[in-house]
Length: 297
Image (cartoon, rainbow, N blue to C red; front, side):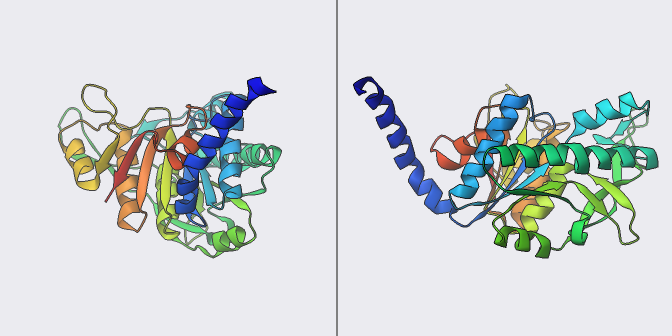
């Protein structure tokens, strides 16, 4: 009995330290983007589900947006559908968008709902098409031609970007004390289905809901400097400078653009963090240490 007391005291101290953080986020909306590469194995998924349930029980209003790039890639390979990328995004034709919707709004979405349910939470799986929550338009992207070094427009097919968000469905779900789990699929005004980048989708949701925090869980520690050291905190202005000088490159650029977009629409701060770290969400929100890179206006 006495041997267990030190451990009990440590746990009690952890709870006491978490109290001011819980008070700060009480009844606040937090949007968490759960990346395809961060989903990891079953243990990692269970840790994530525990974090989400604990947030809801602690008085926060979590909204989960998930990706699923690796899972989509595996299914396309299994079905023999060729896939190509341009500008960091998957070129999506009619056959591909059917698979994307099946994987994202189907198997992955319901898996996450099931994991949250297994930990005692009550989640509901939705996509941007439900209740016309997110209206999308065809995404326009340009790339630099490696030979001519000139900028040219690329056709990504049925890749979309959020044009408008109707928050009424999410307000109703949150009022019912349910946890929304959102697949980044949306429809255009003509009913056409679009594949939307999950980071971009999460940023649009966070902005529309005026979230307290947007967390982007990925497979890297956060934003790194040129010597690969973690940058714990950045401003929007600093982020733009790091893109301009080439420190931030490749797939991190659209993540940073999402951060800037969300902050400009009223989100207090955005964090890019490693979703493979056990209980990364709790470390970021409920401790003094944080995790990853915090970006503010």
